[in-house]
Image (tube, rainbow, N blue to C red; front, side, top):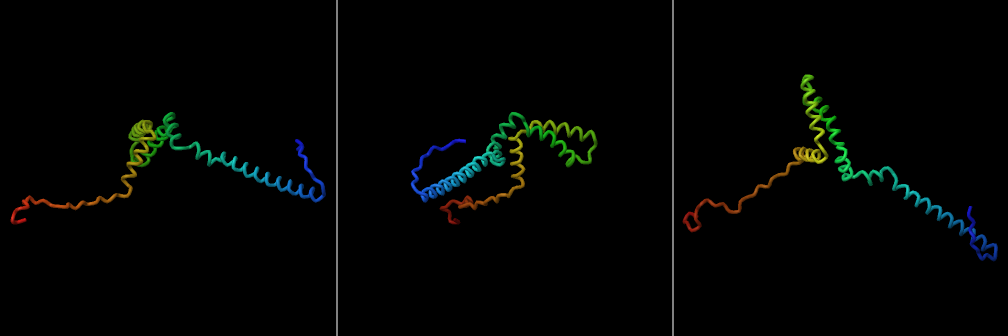
Length: 150
């Protein structure tokens, strides 16, 4: 415990009560400020803030370049997807060949390939942009301007 060696010049009982009340108010204000500063400090370590700070697309791309996470996931998911959808009624040998081939293809995929593939599929199903038909300004029928039929 530390002692505070502040000397107060108190000459009456009223001044003593006033000083006690002001010190209590000061203590309460400092306690509230300390509590709010502590909450702000702890909020920077909340899971949402940490995820927002460290899990960014650029960090994911760096990790994927080193570990090839997307390739490993796709090498497991793509054979299951192909065998359960497209080759559902196929035999064992066909499913085994599709599984091996799609597993190899899945390993070669990385984030850039997947995002490009996603954008290509999205462009197929996205809203179609209507092409504006350009009306020609002047149609030339091959008749010279100084002709009588012009």
